[in-house]
Image (cartoon, rainbow, N blue to C red):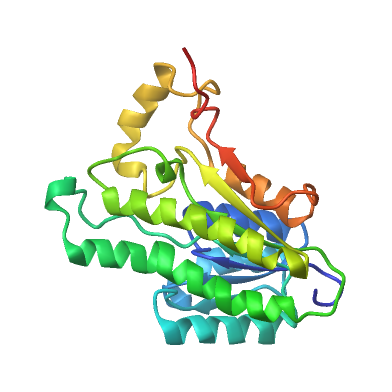
Length: 256
C-alpha cells in the first residue's frame, strides 16, 4: 500500500488486455506500476490516461525476458510503490509467424516461451520474495493471465499454446508455495478478446461467434478481463487460491 491506496504491478500494461486491466485498477483507486517494452514517448497517450485516473501511477520500460530488466523492474516498482499488493503477469506475445507445428523454428519457440513463460515465472519469483517479507496486513495476490490456448490446440501457433499451458502450471505452483505468506494466486484464462493480437483474424472469430461458438454471443473486451482481475485483486474471493477463472463468454462449456 502507498498513502493508503492499494498498489499493483501490471506487465504488458500499455495495450490490449494489459491496458484494460491497468486502467480498471487505476479507476478503482490503485496506484499502478505499468510495465511495457516501448519507450515512454511511444505510450504517452496511455500513460496520460493512466495518470488521469491515478496520478501517482507510473510507467517502467523493461523486457521481462531479460534477467537484468526483471531485477530493475522489481526495484523500480518497489521504490515507487513502497509495498506491492498485487502482481499481474499479463505480458505476452504471439509468434511472429503463424507457422505449422512441423515448420515451427527454435528461434520462435525460444522467443515466445522466453517472454510468456520464463519471463513471467522469474519475475514472479523476484517479486514474490519481496512481497513475502512485507509486514502489512493488506490482501495480497498474484494473477497470471493465460489463455484458453492453455488447453485448446492451435497447431499454427503451438509455441503460444505451450507457453500458456506452462504458465497455467506456474500459477498452480505459486499458489501452493505462496499460501504460507498469505499471498493468493489465480489464473485468469481469457477467450477471444478484441486486441491487436486477434485483429488479424477478427472476421473469422466474428463469424464463429455468430454461429454459436460462445453462449454469450459477442467478442470479449479488455475491460471484461480488467473487471475480473479487479475482483481477485480486491480479495472478493479471498477463501480461494490456485483457481482458474475463465473470461471466455462460456466458450469452454462442454456440450453434447
